[in-house]
Length: 161
Ligand code: FES
Ligand code: FES
Image 1: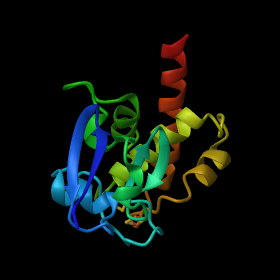
Image 2: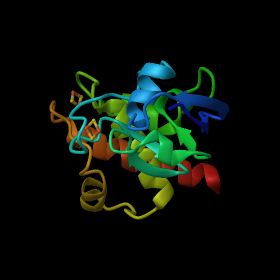
Image 3: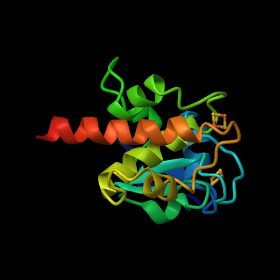
């Protein structure tokens, strides 16, 4: 049985036939759409490496069945920059050395973008750490990650004024 779904991925409408209704959004992105910036770490909802935004909300794409997302808008790390200009969160990660091996970084950045949109952490580093706690970093770059999130948040707030 083949199912067809429509997703808008990084602002591009896509109609995708699914041969298997059990395919996850993560596998769809990586294997069908060649969007390999979204990483597969644990594949069971524990590491956050696969974080993308679905209709503006942070989602572990390894836990989301693609078939359940018909009509959704998906934003991945590949859709964040404006051409050659990095998104403020990406720029802040670079400036604050918020990564080492980089494996967790796309998920961290997408989670940070979602967090800033949620506006739930304010400028409190503890609350940022708590709100980012679903994204693990085996390299332990947490200090830089927290600084980068706070910096990007300040910059985006200033740009909005
Ligand atoms: Fe999805 Fe780890 S790969 S949470
Ligand atoms: Fe290596 Fe986070 S930078 S896992």
